[in-house]
Length: 131
Image (cartoon, rainbow, N blue to C red; front, side, top):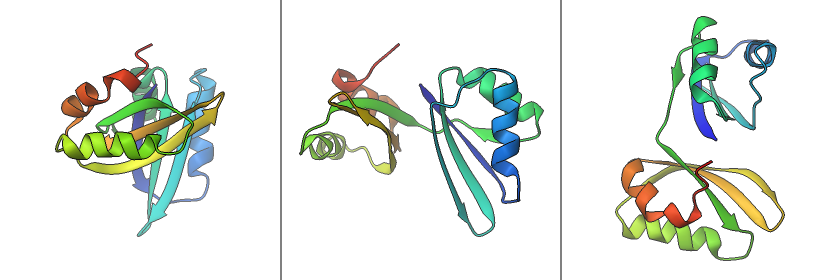
């Protein structure tokens, strides 16, 4: 899964429009996080085919960003998030945002937005699912 982010003026029907564009093209939204600040909507989508999703949304006149995120799968036990965040800190990588994508089957999947993705990917490679 890859993350794409849309930053746009907030308006009624925004989520309906975005989800229609992707749904009509059979692009499944794996995870979504939407927030609004100062009249702007920030829509974070996790999709399997981010290039196609980006093309579709840009054709719908949305500005789409591909943030530097790393998606990891951790054992769902106390202390795992602490271990991973300390690994990043010790490696000099700043975590700018974190989202829990899913939880179940003894695993928790997180998306970390970081300032140094390449380094983060090396540090967290044991936790990454590269399908």
